[in-house]
Amino acid sequence: MTFINEFKNRGGRVTTGSDSGFIYQLYGFAYIRELELLREAGFHPLEIIRSATLNGAEALGAEKKIGSIEVGKLADLVVIEENPLENLKVLYGTGAIKLNDKNEVVRVGGVKYTIKDGIVYDSKLLLKKVKEMVSNKKKEENFKITQPGMK
Image (cartoon, rainbow, N blue to C red; front, side):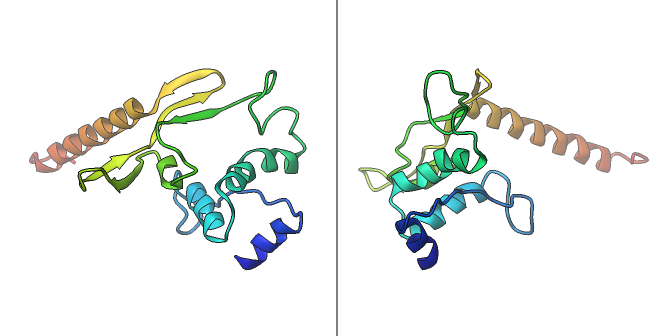
């Protein structure tokens, strides 16, 4: 961590990425964990966001098409209700846990909308639908197992 922070401080370009699907890296979680590790290494939150956006585009030679929000550029976005500069965990699809003003544990953040190729997706609704699909499939499988002669 000291090395990566020193590399950045001396002008090196740091980008983010994850090996999701490899060993213990979970899709949807590993990338944000990578951002958290950069924070732990001493990066300012704005440097972390830049490493996840423009720096990656520059490393790919695609900074004229992607990497920042500008007129004429492609932009796939996530819209969240919390400030990721304060807590990167709010970028998780399910959000983060924190204490509110009444000292109660609440879940905040999470992706509210995903914009991909100009199409706006309600992320909370998609999560709800997936949960329902899994629940229905479990009920269906349980029904098959409990019925005599069914496989």
